[in-house]
Length: 437
Image (cartoon, rainbow, N blue to C red; front, top):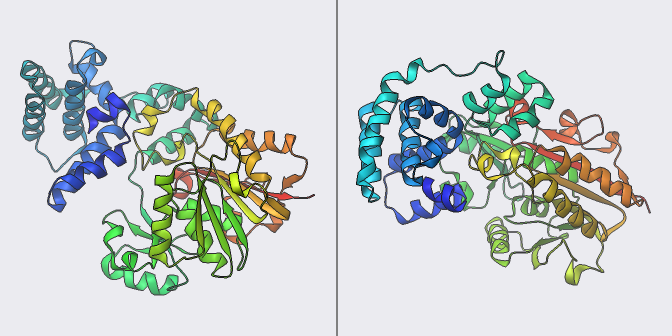
């Protein structure tokens, strides 16, 4: 899986889900496989730094399978207390042998044994003396991301990087059509002793860091949806009301669409758009599980037009735009290596096109929310500023008009900013705009 992610830019979560679905592994082995994949990807920058100190050749020039086996072995040597050093070395050797690279077994064995013996004495760059080296080598960030985060200040950038290397909590949203948060929390504590109410999202519950919520009886019964707290707060900012018509312009996989549908009720209507029909199947499946018959899915490329909805009008429109995803590095550690420096500016053009297209169907005095799960200015504030500069019929909603739940996370412009290191949530940006004419 590691080799596939590096060679063909496969998404780690999808590759892992598919592979574990084919393998009949015991629960501890499934957990270990997940840890090895995510941990190796998350700490690749530090692992490469350590390996270069014990390798007599260029790591980048090694065959991908050999490089991945070395990284996986180095991860276990550096971060895992569950696997003895000798076993980590032996399994890495077995991996390259199983891949048909017998000639590389000696190299892998020698390098990892040397790392096991000398790794503890390899000094990592310190933040005070080498800020960039600390973020790239000690905290495993690509240099271009580290340089951008330095705009927050070295200490803040390091805190953000550390948070993005931590395992995220499992967070769920109570379906108030079928239960209350209090009742659900009491039930979930029986199976998840660490469960607690979220600090800001009024329907949110944190379950801790272990377990598979999709197998929980309450999930199967449609009483909760897995959704990060910051993602829940985007819907709080949108603030859909009972009976309203709401458009989710970039809906898949559907957590926000179902949250909206729970709030507008059976008298309301939610139209979920996406350009990919197969991804919309996820939205429809989730709606069925939650008992939300008033969710309708429509295939449309919102960068061009809204197709059959071009003449419709909605009380509220959500544009949760496709983005670089740099606010979700805790959940998607491979993203830091996939996203390139030029991507945010390129994505901003698409985001602005979607926002302008979706704004056309906002009804009189209607609400438009633009959101992303990234941290770059050009995908966030700059898109909103460009849109307001082109569309005189909209303005930022006044801060005083925004829901109480989001107030603690608003910036000076009244825009929602969630940060992994400040709020223990995914990094999210959202701005609420109002049609004025």
